[in-house]
Image (tube, rainbow, N blue to C red; front, side, top):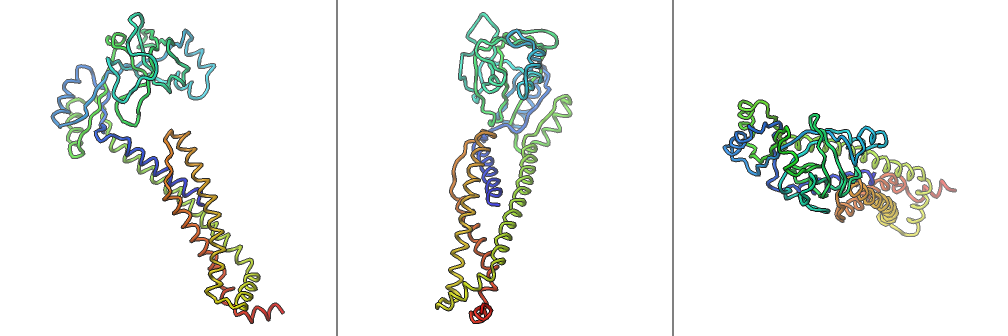
Length: 354
């Protein structure tokens, strides 16, 4: 029970804290897709009229990866499994930029430094998934037209910034003439969102608006419900543990009665006997709490670090609270189960024994 409840709490609070810490105050909350190139000026004017901030827009070209280092994706698919197959078969979104956004950082190579080839910069983890490195050759199919690109740089991306980012960024000379649409992002105050959405739909009905605020709110609500369900299950596990402890104590009622009688005969008061038993149950609770909390810390570290790629930060408060709560529950369950033995008179127990 301690393991389940504490792990759920630690993962949830760490993820929420990470999101709040990493999400910039000026992060966009609106995304506009399917903007035709000749519509962008009007859409931008509309955003400015509603006093939108953090306005950004990039061209988007839809393509298919046709070959990698001279080997067709059909052949590569036969040899691939898992994530690499998905990366090879998905519809690719390309963009072209003179400079990288602020939340991108080059980790290998250089940007648009080779005049002899058409260059592409690939996100580092995506490149690792596909087995790409500097010098790898990619061929894309853009509406039936092949285009050959060479990987000349790798970069990291802070996806949590909620900015416009792509796995592939191509040098402008390669894609400026390609069929394209535009993607835009902006930040708008909540009071203006509905009016802006209505006017956008009336003026540019082909443009799709994604309200990130609503999406994040719904995702957070779903995550809270999932977390609540897991905590309820964990609470049942904790209650089951308490019931087992109580049953074990009740099963030894006769022995407990003898212990109480002996202690009282030796001059210990009822409060003194309660104190002795409380120390015993305290030890039981602390052992359970230490095992559960230790396992919860290890499991949380594994989940956050290796599955969610979020750094684990040790905070003592939840662990101390788990220790105290588990010890208190154990003491309470043990004393309640021992209540009958505590109320018996020593003479009754001794007579029964004789």
